[in-house]
Length: 321
Image 1 (tube, rainbow, N blue to C red):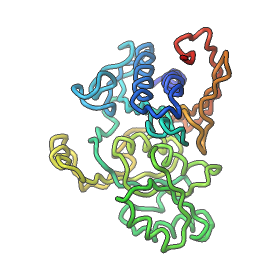
Image 2: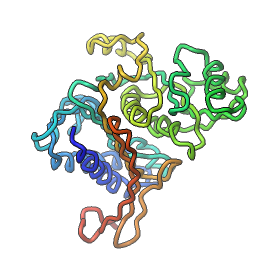
Image 3: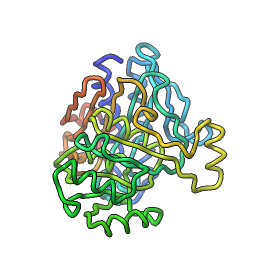
Image 4: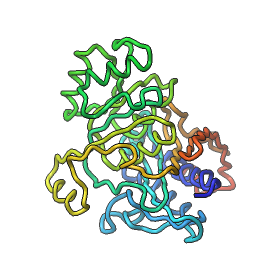
C-alpha cells in the first residue's frame, strides 16, 4: 500500500463523523448511522485504490451500501481488503454519550479475517503487555501478568469491559481479584484501542463483544504494537451454521496474525463524541473541528490529526434547522 493512502482514509472517517455528528443526542441512531454510511461511501469512491469490503454493514441484501463484497475506490492503485464501521456506537450518538467513532481498517488483499457477524470473546493490551496475556488464562492470571508488566499492584490495574449480562462472570472475577473496572456500554473498538495509550487510564480490555469490531480493533492494536486475541462465541440461532458456511472454526483462538496477516495495515478513526483518546466533533458556526487518528503497521507511525472544515465550502455539512 502507498504511504499516501493513510491520509486519504482520514478524509473518509472525517466525512462520516461530520455527518453523523448532526444527530448527537437526538435519539435517532438509525438516522445517524445512515448519514455516516452515505458520507463514508461517497468519499471512498474518490480514493485511488481497488478495495473490497470484507467487514461492513451486512450482506448485499441487508445493506444498501458498504455491504460485504462491495467494491470501492477508483479501481486504480493497490488491491486491499476493507473493514468498516461507519458509526461505531450508534446508541452512543443517539444518547450523546462518550466514545463514538467512525472507523475503518485496511490491509493488502486477502489479509483480513472475514469475521462472521456474531460475538467474540476478546482480550486486548498495550505494548508493555504484549506476549504476557492469553485468552486461555484465567482472568486473575491475566490481571497478575498485566500488573507485573506495568509495575503495578492488581488493585491499580484498570480493566475496561462492555457492561452486559453475558460478561457478568468475568466482571465478578475482576472484582474478586481486586482490580478496577471502567465500564463502557457500546463501542468495542474504542475500548480495545484505549489499552494502548497511557493517558486513557486503561490497562486491559476483556469480555464478549462483536467479532467484526474485533478484527478492526486488531488492526489498530497491531499498528500500536499491542496484543489482541479473540475466540468466536456462538450465542444466537444460526451462528454455528454461519461459521461452517464461512469456513471458520468457532473454537479457534485467533491470534493477531490470524485476524490481520502481513506486515502492512492501516487503521483510521475520527471521534464523533468526546472520548478518552480524542475530542468529538465541535461545530463553531462557520466551521467544524475534527479529531482523528491514523496509524500504519508497517512503519509504526501514529498521527493525531486536528482538522478545521469550512461549512460554507462544504454546504452539505451545514446543520439543518
